[in-house]
Image (cartoon, rainbow, N blue to C red; front, top):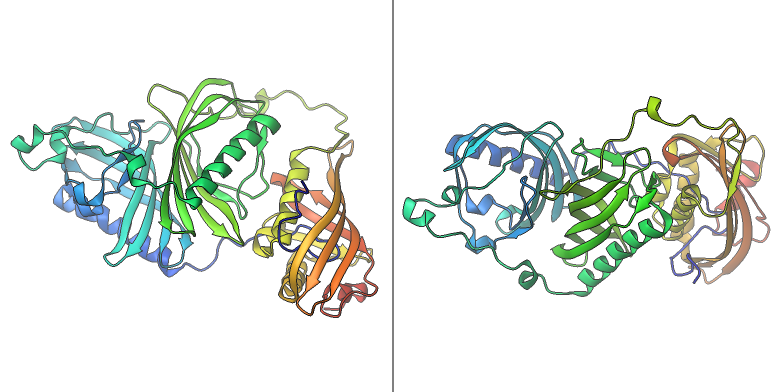
Length: 468
């Protein structure tokens, strides 16, 4: 099957990949409100030495490496503390649907003691929480806690901490079946299929890619929050990992959801050691953009008694690179990256397309030496999609060439078919090449294509003379 054919719209002449997203965008009302809600919740727990049931998540992965817990809002109990001085820090909020859903990722540090349990000093965890807004304001839907490297989580949650009296403490809290609460909707089926496909891709290709605009990730090595660009591939010399017990939790029906599941097998990340007992808990958030589901955040943490990935070896431990780095490939992570940018372009997601390019990337089409900022090309692509009704890739060919010094270029030949809102249909071929830079981002694009007889609504013929 054509890997592009069903993706809406691609540029009429060359398409390209370019576009780096500015992640320092203005703060949304949703992000501000969710951040404030987290701070207020921690302040309340410090003052009242309790976590009210209304403030607790319904679905939770605790910092002791335990399995998923589900307690419906109406059945939740208040959690009591003997001591609580935890403080949230570096709260990063990703808005999933403005005014409706968001995910917060941050650190929680301090000392804590649950009623009936031991004092935990040096409690330092990574936290991911999803929030939805309803009639009662922002409520926490899911939470994932995991210790930072060198920090402590909670080993056990004493039963007495979840009761108001000694008599109540004799009755164990009820943990409900997650599956009973999550109907197998079309959205759930689609996301489960997507997750299965990604792990299958890992096993087959020994590499992966991030989401459309990149993802924010807590890795299972206990490290700090990382941002992975949309084309920054992670390579796996060994991967037999498969997902298990995938739970899809709706946040906004048809628009945003959380996936919570387990992953197990053997895994080796390039530069790191083999982990034969890799078993982790995974929380991922997804949003639907331009008709496709994209992963926005990930939180990986090892199950109790198992292992996550190990930190990569330092550079001095790596094998010396060969003097001659030249090479040729038709199947590699660099081609994956360019094909990803093409799909984003075809789908009209120009922000995601732009995220594939370095901040200072340049381009030139049909004219040597007329280098211009990549953001100008992004604007041209947006104007094209405003005029186009549908765009398809009819045929394509990609190759990656590496020169002796290690410089990588991906060359592509693509035939596009564009149907304009005016009713005009345009088919033409183009050849383009992108230079691959650090973190797999594109630093330069050059393209050649015939602009003769292009429809009047096509903005690409303007480039012949450098006009805007």
